[in-house]
Image (cartoon, rainbow, N blue to C red; front, side):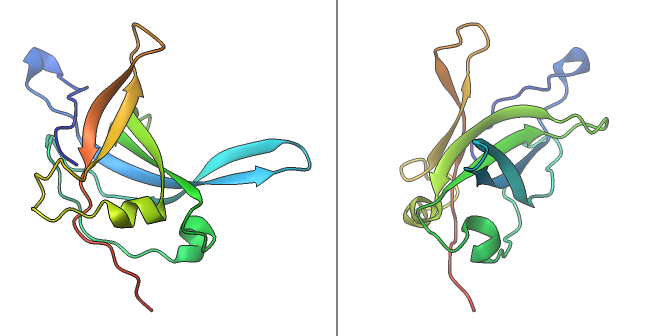
Length: 143
């Protein structure tokens, strides 16, 4: 991620956000009209870093998107907290196809192909703010 909004200024404004991401897929039960987001992957948190680079990870396509590359997935960015109630920073809904197309070509500061992570402004519930840029450095299908 690039340019993560600092939501954790702490005592004397010395702290920074401790970002981590969570990827979720939507579970729907059409018989009762029920749907919810189910987390399928979570990164480690990066202490006091507003431009984190997370370790690569592998996930089965069945687990991620039911093997449907056009199924919507949600990527949420959080500020890690000791008390387990992590502070949401923002999120984006996208597809695996879009993530694959968004792979950057010019390094981890490449905003041109980055995906905007947004949050609804607390003061004006209709305005969305960009709170970070998701930069995809590598994406591959492996057997």
